[in-house]
Length: 130
Image 1 (tube, rainbow, N blue to C red):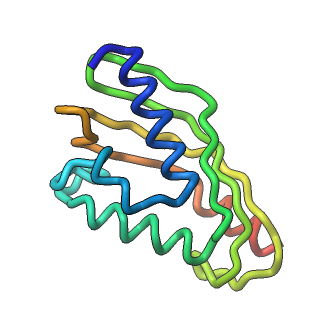
Image 2: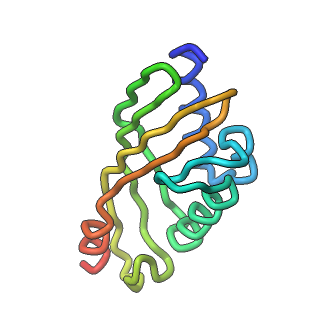
């Protein structure tokens, strides 16, 4: 994929992610992937996403920066939401969170083959505990 195609691909992925259209993730995520340096599957990714959105129905990812290098992407995103259920061991209080996420991907044959993400869950817990 060219850099332009990778940018479009990632922006389409984020649009589907933010629409919580997880049944469309087969367009973006390979059946078998490396997830945070461990072997995984698309179903593993979907389970994490569905669990998060069940607890945080307004979960949103906003792209701040995107860097491309061949078949690799690196993104800095802002994640926001207001949990409606207990999440990360914190009962819902009506508090919202805003955290930075760093994500690294590798794309092969038009789908993610490698996905890694890092965010400060402790900062999120502090914000939610109010």
